[in-house]
Length: 91
Image (cartoon, rainbow, N blue to C red):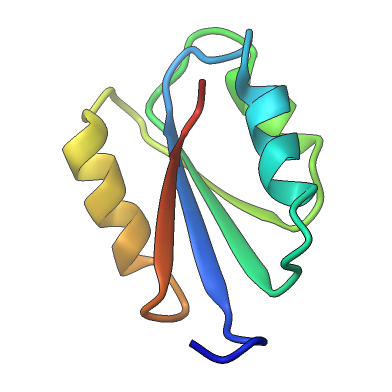
């Protein structure tokens, strides 16, 4: 991997309002800056979606129903701009 390769970080989340802010900050505060950040909100019924929307430069996809982690990771990978992908949990 080259030092400036674009890396896509994917995060699937469902009702994660308690932890999502810190999880997102942990990625955004990394020293590596060439990141694409993609969050799949799996039909949260709490404030998760609103918390994610407060961050700039995060692509958010919101499911209309709860689909599960496997579906969400596959959806995220299909929406990545490149082949280098890192997955992180919302909590």
